[in-house]
Length: 119
Image 1 (cartoon, one colour):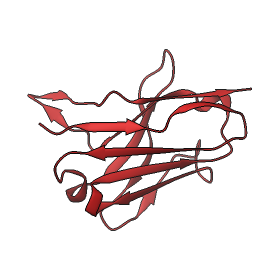
Image 2 (cartoon, helix red, strand yellow):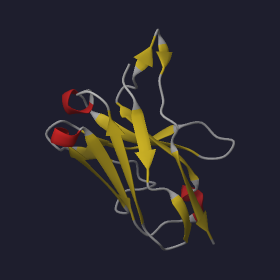
Image 3 (cartoon, rainbow, N blue to C red):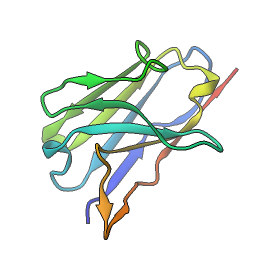
């Protein structure tokens, strides 16, 4: 069973920066498109960044120009550099493949890392 371990979250003031990290067991990341998702309080989880095996990236307009996703296939890791953070970026952030990993037909998620942006 693959494991996903996110880290790097915390409390930051608006305008600040954070860098999230995610490590996966096995080679699952090196073989797939990988993404960062987030789930704000009371809302559904959404994809905020994705990166292909060769490094092509995509972002929704809500984070474009502020977030940068990168990956290290040799370390089975993915990163999210977040700048100019806004209170609306407050959420639990998760890494996963795109589409998400499943376990016995159900989506598999790590524990996530909390990002809180104060105004």
